[in-house]
Length: 128
Length: 150
Image 1 (cartoon, rainbow over the protein chains, first blue to last red):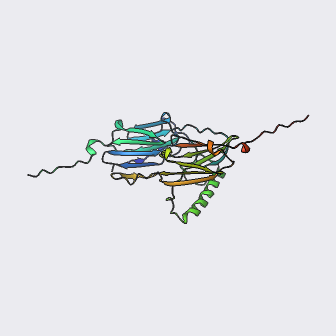
Image 2 (cartoon, helix red, strand yellow):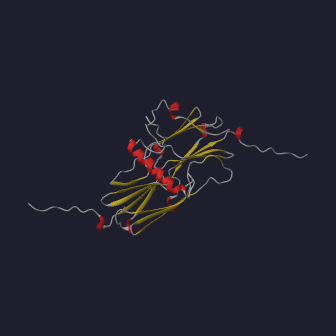
Image 3 (cartoon, chains in turn orange, cyan):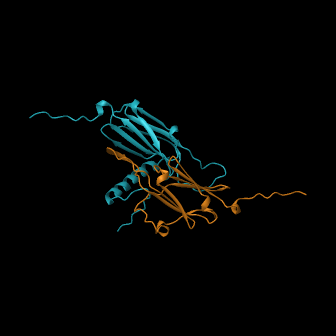
C-alpha cells in the first residue's frame, strides 16, 4: 500500500544530531487521485526555520520556531515552544523532486504528486 | 529506573513536575470522561498567559485557523476567545491515512488577573500563534512608592 509510515529518528539522522527533546507535530495524511498530502501543525514556525528533506524515501520535517518573548510573570503555561521533528517513510512511488511545500498560518502542507504509473486510469470502452 | 510513559509534546521535566502533570492529567481525564469518550474531546487552543507591569499577554496556538475568523471580546475582566477549526476530513475524494489534528469550534473564557483598558486591546497573529495584548488600567498598574525620610 502507498501509505507513509513513521520511522525512528535515530536510524536516519546520524549525520545531524537531533536536539534532545522535540515536539512531534500532529499530522494529517490523505491521498487523492493526484497524490499524497501531508498537513502538519507547526505553530510559530517561519519559512526560515523550516527544513524539509527527503533522503532515501525518508521525508524529514525539522523546524525551529522563533522563541516567544518571555516577558513578565508567567501565570499559565499550556504550551511550550521548541523544535519540531518528524520523519515519514514514503512509498517508493513518489518523486521527491516534485514535492511542493507551503507554510501558512502555522500549517505546513506538503503535496507529493503521484507518478503517472500510479494514477488511476479510466479505460474507455469503444463500442463497435 | 521506573518506566516513564512517552510524552510527545512535553519538554524534559523533573520527576516531581512530571508526577504533578500525571496527576493533573488523571483528574482532567476523570472529569471529562463522563460526558466525552477518551480522546474525542473537542479541541480548544492551548494558552500561555503572562503579566508585566503594564499589560497582560495571552498567547494561543491556533495553527490553521484564519485569525480574521476569531471572535475576541473583553467584558469586564473576562477575556473570551471564540473560533472554529474547520474539519476538512470529510471532503470528497480524500482518502485519509492519518488524522491526528483535532477540529471543532471552541470557546475559551478566562478571568484576567488585573483590570484592563478594553478599548486598547490588540490582537496579532503570526504563523499560527495569536498574541493578545491587554494594557492594564491605570489603577491596576504597579506603582513604585518612593520612601522619603532621612
